[in-house]
Amino acid sequence: MAPAPARLSRRTRPTSIPSEAVPSIEHMFVEAGARRPSRAAAQASELEAAPTEWIEREIGELAAHIAAATCRWLELIAEYDRREAHAAWGFHSAGAWLAWRCSLEPRSAREQVRVARALRELPLLRERFSRGELSYSKVRAITRIATAEIEAELVELARFATAAQLERLVRGYRRTVSSESAAAAHRERFLCCEWGEDGCLEIRGRLAAEDGALLLKALEAGREAIRQGGSAEPGAIQRVNEADALTQVAESALAGKPGVRSAGERYQVVVHVDAQGLAGKGERGGRLEDGPAIAAATARRLSCDAALLAMLHGPGGQLDVGRKTRAIPPSLRRALQARDAGRCRFPGCDNRRWLDAHHIQHWARGGETKLENLVLLCSHHHRLLHEGGFRVSRQANGRLIFRRPDGRAIPSLPSPARGGCGELRARNRRAGLAILPGAAMPLGRGEPMDHDLAVAGLLARAGP
Figure 1 (cartoon, one colour):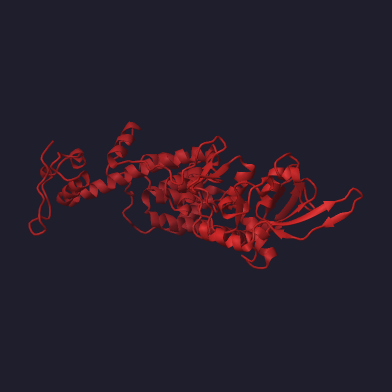
Figure 2 (cartoon, rainbow, N blue to C red; figure 1 turned 45 degrees about the horizontal axis):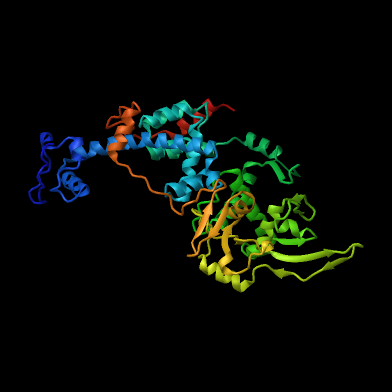
């Protein structure tokens, strides 16, 4: 290995260093002998002695390598999402799993899943991205409006435009809509609600743009209420998550204002006769008032933290209605809120709204309603423990162990992986990518873009 360049003081360091005095890339990032205190310290010392031109070239080349690796990463995410593999870990969206597994901010993780899905349908964009020619910022913007008709034009524009110019172009394109299409959308609006054969309410509809925007705002408010405190779970643009938000909107509307009712007041379980099914000695469940039948596991979940009203039927049809009691007293619930810090205890979930108090051993099966037998869970994970095959147990030291249906324990935090820029370069080389320092640099020179002309061209290409 060539000797490392001498460290120069700030007073004697020249403005530039001859290229022959600069170590090769391999030497810059290869650990030297034991005389150096650490790899990081050695690299820091070498970087301080490197010329500015080399640093500029290295930044540009690594940016292209990162873009290519990001494309591969998103392709893997798209396949993971397609398989719905996140459900095996108890997450109801790939974005929630990604935030937990890769320590990402939940909103950023959901956006990356959206981009990953879009890339599956955009081969030209994916090809340029995989070669490091387009940054993630550009790809993210393009996927908001790209279709098969305008994909080629957008990719060509992205090669010349800056990321900021591309964002303005996308915003202008999305704002453009004709009055004729708006009137047609208003005429064709509808909403249909009907009970399905499996007992679920099925909702289909079509709304005009302004009405749809109003609904999305309401759903956004519902999602925000659910994920108060930075939950990784709700909020992704997926059916199950939007269903959570819609339920939140409905509950808030019926309550008069958000947050009026506690989680335990959302349900009133009417126990008619079948106490054995509630205790797990049979599969006979119950039924919703003015609605379909529900499974025994669903009845157990609803009764886990609810107001209970016993109704006993006599042999001659007589009805004895008892007093309503609380499964979990308010004082105990306050203690539970304090112990669990007011959030869902399922690994990777930080949901702090609409939490249920779950009996680790159900009260109908002899479990005591005491703090040691209770845990706070969001509605999604509460459903998984009752109807999804997941389990939770408390060890003697008080630690909670959550398990998947196959018995595998779910860690609170997954083991972190390690990586480095050398491995990143090697992986890209093995993938056949010959990435140059200027690969990610736009072909344009920063000149202003005629956004009106560009939008008009895209609209003409997109067709009616």
